[in-house]
View 1 (cartoon, rainbow, N blue to C red):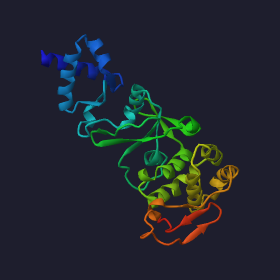
View 2: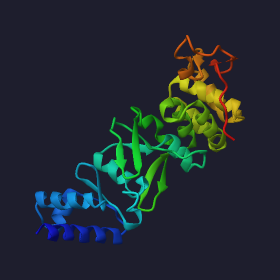
View 3: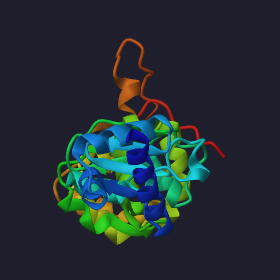
Length: 275
């Protein structure tokens, strides 16, 4: 009987793949297969042990196509949008993963980074690690989010302007100042200056200052002009550190090497760009 249930679920999953789908809920499967909840869970557990099925969130399942068997899961873009709709949260792919999608990266991105409206635990999906970063004001940055087609549907991705702001807003996710500066060097030419100014209204001023300084330093000053004007209209800048991590311990922090009067940025060490 257990084998029959597992076989029925395998057939259901194969049919789903043949129609171009990879996700389903336990509720959908039990209704279609006309089996009890316990029988379904037993069959699903056995298929998960065989690495044919992934269960990243309660009652949400991802079929592992044969070509991704060695990975343990299909790529996150295949199921991320469906997953976020299942948990009922607004989201967008951001940070280094978004920069990579915009063609600006110089090293492998170790996490699939997603910004969400609620704090969520990381998901280990085979070889992939999906990391969630919390943002309260999703509506304030809606203009900076794009929709991209995937092999199975679509997903939401931060545009170049929002990606640039987020890289300075979530420094722990950017791989350090040197890496962020390296990414911005390539990303800068893709930034819409008007959109950047609009999005800056929903961004902390120190983040705006750091991004503006880096864009100037990297030869993208024109991209930051409208943002500078918009931010300056809100009042004078206060001095802030370019690299908070470098200045955190006053006993070991390098002395200030540069003062950027335009953005009121204190530079203790110029970022090193990976060419």
